[in-house]
Length: 433
Image (cartoon, rainbow, N blue to C red; front, side, top):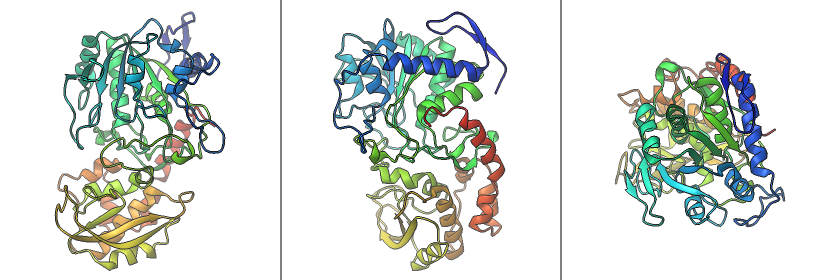
């Protein structure tokens, strides 16, 4: 935690509080404001599985009559996942509601309406459905992004995007960059929460070393963070932002930390073109590491991040991977021809990852085990020349240990101390118990 910070927040006198104390106060205020009204579920539908009736941050916001946004000119950072449970986009819903003064939309990677592939965005345009100006935030940060917020004329920036639970999934760094820019521009920031599809049980994997910071990891958090976007916003504000933003979070109700996505009763909208199902998200935090190798990570197939392979790989890899006896997962010898990306149009051999018990499955350990065995059985194995694997894992450790012949257990043990330290910090920002 950094030094103490003196700030004024809505509905109260000026107070001098630690960042964490201030965060707890403002977060609680945001949650209470959003839930004070009796529910009037205009955007309702079937409750979450188990009868708990999960309601997203947006549903809580709407049920409270949008009072958190009263008197504010509003801009929304979102993408196709920002939908109600009856799959209407929240931008369309708010634009049609007189209680919200919606002025702008800010699109991340893949764009607001989701028309761009990985590494792309939609640019600046006016949304045909609403007429609202849509600004491109992808690969924009700091003062440049702050100037975009200023140009838009909004007072409050709202964030509502479904995350995938992994450090290198870029939407959480869009959140970080937008929080930083909103602070620079003097804008208020509101985060509408959604479930972590990996559950929120625990943090897993190596922690980013700051010298490896990129857009797939700005700050030292673990590879699978086990947090919701609202919890991450609190962590970013309390630990990492040099100038904290005026932050409010609108929590979910009915979500428990051990819930997978299908317990929510919510529709799954792919957050990006290669995240087609919640099952993809379950493995992604580990198998995305193959982006840092010369093997295909399944992009261009119907099972991205579940199918992994390369030309010349055969049955030996599945046998070696199954020999690790990793919990909750089995590996099938598989052959596939990606339609784009690595090995486009070429039939390659490899494995399909079959998670048979997600309760005990560890995606990060599984990803490491697959890297270790791929290097052992396939002479053609190579890291990408730009050492992208170091950006994904957050240091040189994983690459250099595997090159030195380390086992899966030895590689995983290498990050134990830093992960324990991150887990202690993380606990202070959890909103759901």
